[in-house]
Length: 300
Image (cartoon, rainbow, N blue to C red; front, top):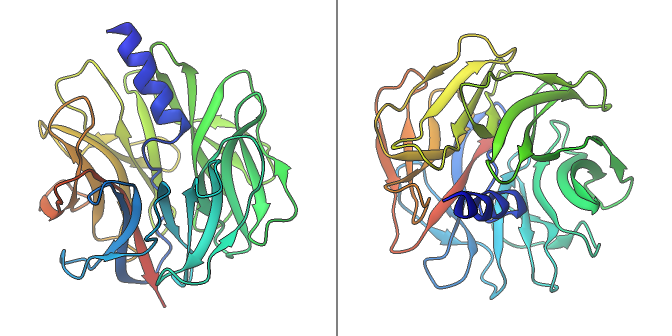
C-alpha cells in the first residue's frame, strides 16, 4: 500500500491529473476538460448543460490541463506533442496553437494571471518541482518558489496579488498542505491544517474563497472542501459521495465543477457540478473514458 501511494502521489505530481484553476469573473461559458475517450488524452469543451462536446486538440499526443484566459478567448494547456511535456496556448476553438515553454524539464499545471499577460506553472528544471512565472509569449521566465519540498498546482487569485499552491512534503505518504505566496515570491503562508490532505485548489471568482479536493489514498471517501482565502471556515461540501478532486468555480460563483471517482484509484472520472453550499449535486458529463480537470470559461 505504501508503495502504491508513493506511485500515485508521483503520478499526481508530474501531471497525470489536472490542476484546478481560478474562475475569473464573468458570464458562464463552456467547460474545458481532459479526456481519453478516444484512446489518447485530448482537451475537450462542453456546454454547462452537458451538450455540445467538441474535441479541441485532435492530436495523437497527450493534451491536458486546460485553463481559460481571463477574457475566455485563449486556453493554456499541457502537451507532449514535441516529445516532452511543455506548455502551449490555443484559441478557445482549438486554433492558433503556440508553444510557450521549450525545456528538457517537465513543465506542468499552467494557470493564467488575471491580466492575461503571464502564466504560472510548476517545473523540475531546478531539481524539485517549484513554481515559475513566464510571459504568455514565452519570455521573461522567473522562478517563484525554492523550498526543500515539491510545489505544484498553482492558481492565481482573481486580484492578482496571491498565488495558491499545494506543497508536497513527502511523496511516500503524500502529505500535503495548501499555501499562498505573493506574486513577487514573498510572504509564503500555510492555510490548511494537518487534519486534511489537500491538493488541486481553486480561488472563487471574487477571490474570497478557495475550494480544494482531499487526496487521501487510504480513505473510504474524499470530499471537496471550501474555505475562506485565509484558511478559516473550512467545510466539506461533498459528504460520503465517493472520491472527488479538481474543483473549479463557475465565473458567476454559483456552481463548482469537479471530478468524481467511484474508487480511490481515481480512475475513471466523470464530471459533476455542485452548489457551493453542498446542495444540488448533478452529473455534468460522462464518457466511456476518463474525464477530468474541468475549467470554466469566463465570458465578458
